[in-house]
Length: 187
Image 1: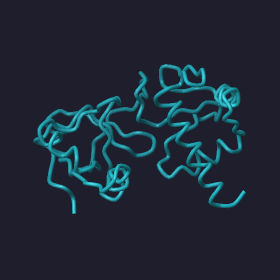
Image 2: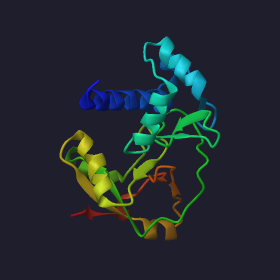
Image 3: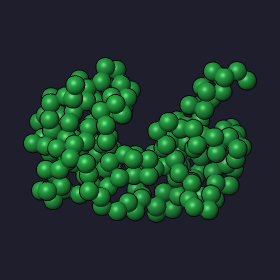
């Protein structure tokens, strides 16, 4: 298999794992535990039963090489889960954390008016996702075209009592970002 074919397969596999570990475990007959974990052997069997064969070695590569570090194994390496971004009910157990003074949110121009009016809402996810740097937020926003990166006054939000958590892959999570905490697009 050529390098680019292997890379494309890795991306397809990562996207499918995101789907079943974050949004639709029923698609392949999975049941996530309350914290979003599933046994690796159960995942691999379910994938194979639904024509998505994956070896443990291939799964290890997807987890290891995913640029967004979307997935994590538990300390024993016998269970796996998505690090954040779930639309199915899970409690990832992340503790409150003190955010940096400024965080960033990547989005696209078509939703800016709504964001300016309503702030950032989790939509179909459990939390609003924020980035620690503008570069990461730019990549996130670019998924749907030309990105716009908004600044978030996280220090003022925290001082005003808003809670923040940070996921295993460094994504900052909060329940919502009211419009008064949003800055102009980052340059």
